[in-house]
Image (tube, rainbow, N blue to C red):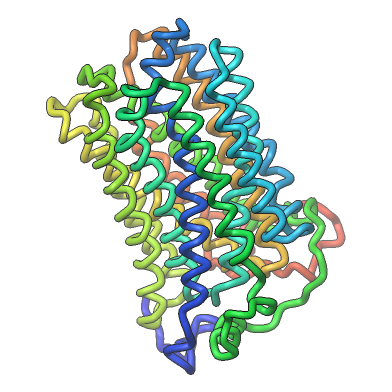
Length: 448
C-alpha cells in the first residue's frame, strides 16, 4: 500500500541532490561483468551434459551427483564466505575468489570420468561461493538502500548474460576445437577480468574517482555502528530465518533450472549441440528481463512512496505467480512454448532473487550483510544438493520424466513468499545490538 513520502524512513526518502554522480554504476557494471563470467563457468557443464555423458559413459544418477558436488561445496563455502569477506574486505576477497574459480573452471578440461568431474565441480563450487555475498556487500557499500534492489537486479542480469553467452558461443567452440577448449576459454576469461578489477575497485571513501557529492549520496542512509557482528549470533533473529529458509527453497529450484533445463530440452525435443543454442539463449534473454524488471518494480514503488514492506512483497508476489505456469512445461507440445515457460519461470526467479537479496540490507546493517548473504546462499545450495541427487535418481528411475521436479518448481516461490511473510511480516530491521539474554533464536514473529 502506498504511503506519504514523509512517512518513509529517511534512508528510503528521495535524495536531496537528484544528480549526485554516476561512478557507483561503474562499480555495479564491474560486478555485473564478474557475475557474467562466474555463471559462464558454472553453466557450461549443463549445456555440454549430453555430450559429456555420452563421451565418458556417465548416467543420469551420476550426473545428478556431479551437480550435487558443486552445490554441496558451494553451500559449505558460503557458510564461511560472508564472514570471511566481512573480515578481509571485498577488494581482496573478490580478487582471490575470481582467480581461484577461474583456475577451477580450467581444470575441467582434464576430467575424464564421473569422479573427475565431481572433484573439479566441487572445487568450482567452493571457489565460486564468495561471488554473491561479495556482490551483496559491495552494493551495500556503494549504494543507498533505495537503489540496492535495482543494483542487485543489474548484477543478477550478469548471471543470465553469462548463461546466455555459453549457448551462443560454446557450441561453435566445441564443434571446432573440442570440449577441453571450451573449459579453458571460459576459465581463462576470469583471469583477464582481474586486470580491470584490481586497479578500479576501492571502497567508496577511499576511491579517488568518486566525487564528494556522490559519496554523500552513497552515505545518505542513517549512520550505523561499525562493530563486528558474531556470525553465530545472527541465528537469533527471525529476519535471518526469513532470508535463509526462503533461499533454501528458491536457490534449489534455480540450480535445477540452470543445470537440468538444457538436458530437458535435449530429452523432450531431441536437440543436439548444433541446435540447443538458440532456445537456451532465448531462455536467458527472458531471465535478464526479469532480473532487472523485478528489481525495478520495488525500487519504483519505493520512489512512489510505498513502504519498504509493501514494495518488496508486491514485487516478490508478482514474481512468485509468474513461476506457476512452468508446472505445465512437460506436457506442452511445442518447443518454443516450453522455452517460453522455462524462460518466464527463470525471469521470475531472478526478479524474486533481486528483491530477496535486497532484504539483507533492508533488515540488517552493512556490517552483517556479507554474513547474512552467505548464510542464505549456503542454505540455498544445501537445498540444491538434495534436489540434484533426487532429480538424478528420479530421471534414472523414470526414464527421463521431468514432471515432478517442474511441478515442485512451480510452487516453490509461493512457498518462499509465505516463509518470508511468516518470519518477517513487516520487514522490520533486526535489532542487532539488542540480543536476547537467553541465547535462543527468536524465530517467530512478535505478537501484534
